[in-house]
Image (tube, rainbow, N blue to C red):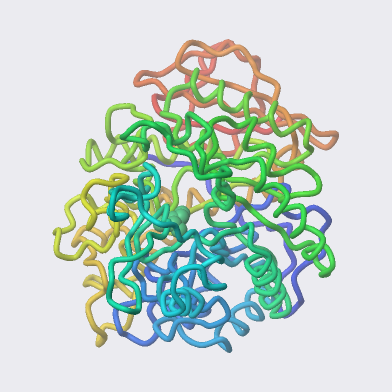
Amino acid sequence: MTQHLVVPAQSARSGGGEPAPQRTGWWRDAVIYQVYPRSFADANGDGMGDLAGIRSRLPYLRDLGVDAVWLSPFYASPQADAGYDVSDYRRVDPMFGQLGDAARLIEDAHALGLRVIFDLVPNHCSDQHEWFQQALREGPGSALRKRFHFRAGKGENGELPPNDWESIFGGPAWTRITEPDGTPGEWYLHLFAPEQPDFDWDHPAVADEFRSILRFWLDLGVDGFRIDVAHGLVKAKGLPDLGMHDQLKLLGNDTMPFFDQDGVHEIYRSWRPILDEYPGERIFVAEAWTPTVARTANYVRPDELHQAFNFQYLATPWAAEKLREVVDLTLEAMRPVGAPATWVLSNHDVTRHATRFANPPTDATQIRTPGDRELGLRRARAATVLMLALPGSAYVYQGEELGLPDVTDLPDEVRQDPSFLRASGQDGFRDGCRVPIPWSGAEAPYGFGPASGGPSWLPQPAEWAELSVEVQSGDPTSTLELYRSALAIRAAHPALGAGDGVEWLDAPAGALAFRRTHADGAFVCVANTGSSPVRLALPVPGRLLLTSGEEPVREGEETVVPADTTVWWSL
Ligand code: NOJ
């Protein structure tokens, strides 16, 4: 097993009973922890995580050393896409609790010095949303249908979809409805599942409604929003055909008539002043899949959103040259707009990085084979230590701090990913990263819920007993203690955190090395992504702060960094 140095926690944050801290630009270097409410902690024992469970575990997150918590959706929802199908944007789904639980969660988090970010889903709602249900009842041409994209079908009897767009989850992006009089009727657009009809953002009522929803949660005290499908709200005029099949292949490479249209930016420019009216530096982070980091930068211009996820970084394999390139591209793209870079390795939509890096290099984000677990974990630890050294803000997905792998062998009957059920869509194996996390004990649900409760909504593997928070706490070789140490050092070291550049140092092939300098102290990070040790002709690099694996060895003027290891030094 690997080892690393444990530095006592020395957080820059204030704690205990105070409102959210007022540090200017907190989001420029924040470490934001993603909670997937279904799978974090189950207080009532129904096998499904809930808000009360999350509240009970907030001290764990404070001790881990993160600055903020982002919660995936917990709103009223039929759960066709695990809550990304919202039927009432102002209600908490009873399976997660009540509005009071959300309010208390924000209060408790603030008292611990943590900020709270909620997920806003503005591209589509649930087909059970009151507006959509009314649109179905009112018939063609009605006022409510205009809030969605209803169209007559093509073909002699309207039996063909209005255009050739494909759903991200597979199949056509259109579903035909039966009109109130029982006849086959219009079609409506859904970029995701049929249960997720897209709003028509050209309709003023849609824009008004979302401004009101923003205020509703801001009034409750939330510190910001992650915007789901931020790149999708505006569709090209006339909904033009793409003229090809297998459109998913284009995602992330080309501008599509339904993604990354310039019109989306007007919406964000209209949202920003609302957020700025509220005290306490509240923020927006965009989930925007765009062809390039340069296009992503458009979302974080000074009058738009604060941050955007860096999916190009997430999709980069564990390979020094490629990593260096994406770091440079990111920093170059963000500099002109003055936004912080963000770094992310895992979330609820992609295979966990411990499993991605256990498999042969790929830019695919969903992988179905466990690969070499030990190697994957070693690389995941090194990748995280590298990520946390980069200038800007970083995202951590629940369970990665435990080194959890994806569960690649879930039985088909338990899978709930709508994409899996539609069979032909975007991979569909997202359940593997959504398995409830282990807290303690030798038997499932490993403290996720009470032992007397029902089985967790997705089964946890037997090996996870060994990966629980309880087992890893206090073990200096554990991944949990590595994260705690890294976050504490990151918060305390003057050269870490916010910034817009790194100074690259010479490094042998397969490794990357950079320096970050601050008046109060400099810092060097070396990541060896290769499978054998590298020798660096670095001058005495200073005091060793942290290593993701074995300690580097000094040999004369050289420093030998082990394979698949990232090391931090303070100068
Ligand atoms: C992105 C979310 O992260 C994903 O989980 C969801 O399925 C789609 N958006 C649709 O809302």
